[in-house]
Amino acid sequence: MEKSVKIALVGFLIVLAYATSVFLDTGFWIVPFPLFSYLLFGVVVGSMVQDKLNIKSYVPLLTLVILRCIGNPFTYTFFLDEAAYYEFTEGLTLSLFRIFETLSVFPLVILTVGFKGIQQKITALALCAVYILTLIPPLELLNYSFFTVFVLTLIYLKNKHFTIPALLLLAIFDLLEGYSVLFA
Image (cartoon, rainbow, N blue to C red; front, side, top):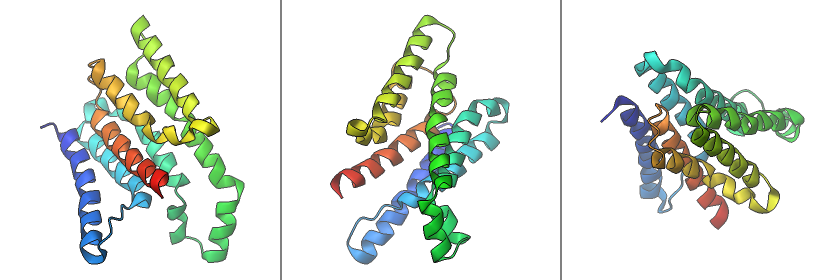
């Protein structure tokens, strides 16, 4: 098993261990959604450390994950008191970070799929179009399944990109969060 797959598996096992321990204590499955972005950050940085030759391949994914960490309201609970936290989350700054996070998906798709051959160009543009469709309000719940479609497309095209294990973990986390939003 490749080291990047092992690192992504460790991130998933951390979530599984946490959810199982909470289940044993309370009898309910509680998945730690606010911690997903931090676990992804650890997985991407760990993958970058173990694969120093291809470190540039991880930069678009690292950018997305950093923006997710910054856009995560849980981040600011460590630095702000309750009144300042409420004011911050209602303000424009957090929305701007989320807009940048949304925009960072496009370079991630294009640089991961590639943009050299006609098949790569069509695939990258089609995935970008699908992502744009998931941002439209009636279809916004499908945004949680975008990275699943992205990873499945990479696997179908037999794209051997170094970030696929971390992207698969991102897809799993997004599906878990989408499932929670759908049935909550």
